[in-house]
Image 1: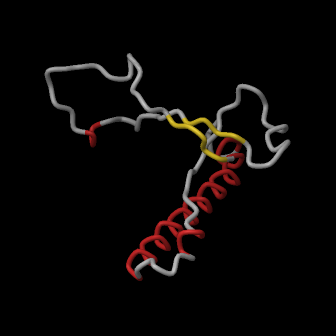
Image 2: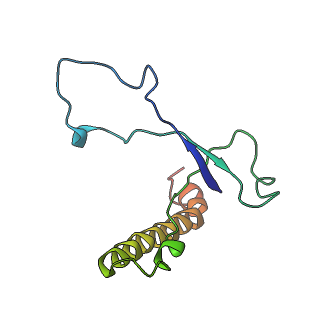
Length: 110
């Protein structure tokens, strides 16, 4: 899937003005941002049931930027680091997907 559009405004109801400053560390769970995804390949989404929720990990692809001969060594190292973090996050997402049935059926305590 390719991210084609992201939420660019905070809709009414997600933000409430208060007289008190809030510490982000006290939030119970993180907020959400809506992203519009389109399939990279045709017929990629046929097996996804309508109305289902998806967990996604968006990461960059700096392969084309790394081929630029005018790029400094520091910048190349930084782009490699960004790609490495994306690769690790993608691997973690796949492991979580593999473990989901075990956590749901075996470790849930029901």
